[in-house]
Image (tube, rainbow, N blue to C red; front, side):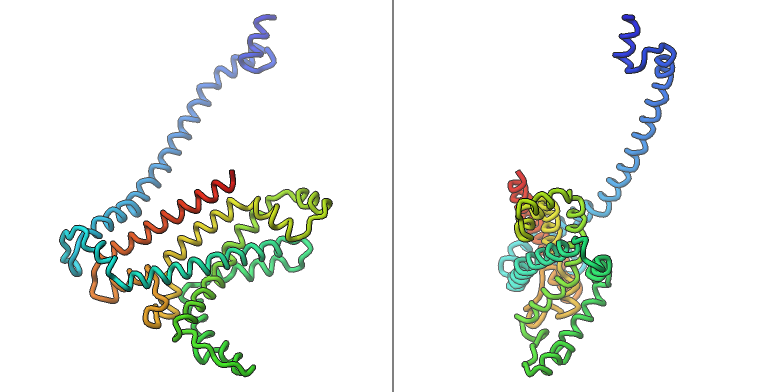
Length: 319
C-alpha cells in the first residue's frame, strides 16, 4: 500500500507499476522531442536576428557614422559635430519640424477619435450592412499611396470637384494647394481619410473581445450610450488606444508620400516635413548625405522620446 501511494504521488498515475514503467520508457523520447523543437526554435530566432542585424542595425550604425561626415556626393570626410551644429541654424529644419508637429497635434487625435466613434457604431449587432461599412471604411488603407494622393489632389485642386460644388452654391473657391493654411488642412484630410479605417480595425477587434454581459449589466443600472463609452469601452481599450497612438505618431513623424505627391512641400515650404526635407537633401538638392543623416536622427530621437512619454503616461493610467 505504501509503495502504491508513493507511485500515485510521484508519477500521478493510478498505481499500476506497468503504467509507471511505460511512462519511464517514454520520458527519454519526450525529452528528445523537446530538445529538437527547442533547437529548431533557436534556429528560426537566430535567422531573424541575423536578418534584422543586417538590414536594420548595421544601416543605422552606418547612418550614424555618416552623420559625422561632411562633403558632397561620395567625397565624404570626418567633420565632427558640423552637421549637428548646422541643424540649429537651418530655417528649413525648423519649418519642417513645425509642420510635422502641426500634423501630429491636429491630425492624430482627430483620426483616433473618429476611428473610435466609427468602431463603436459598427460594433452594434442591430446595424444592418455592418460588413459593407467596415470594408468600405477600410478600403482606403489598401489603396496605393501615390494613387490616392493624386485623387485627393484632383478633387481639391483650384478647379476641382470640391471648388465646383462651392461655386454652385454661391461660395468662393478655396485655394487648397496655393495657400499654406489650406494646404495643411488638405494634408490632414488626406491622412485622416486613408488611415482612420486602419485604426478602426484594431478598436473593433478589441470591442469584440469585451464580454457583452458587462454592457447588459450597465444598461440594467441605467447607463446611457455616452456613459458606457467613457466608463467602460475606453478604459477596456486603453492598451489598444496606446498602441494606435504610438504607431500613428511614428507614422506622422515619417510622413512623406502625401506631402510629396499633393503639394510637393509647398507653397514656400508651407507643408514640408522632415522626411521630405531628407529626401530633398539626398536627391533634389546637391547630394549631402552626411547632413541628411544628421537630420534623419532627429526623427529617430523624436520617435523614441514621444514613444517613451506615451508608454509612461499609458502605463500610469493602466495601473
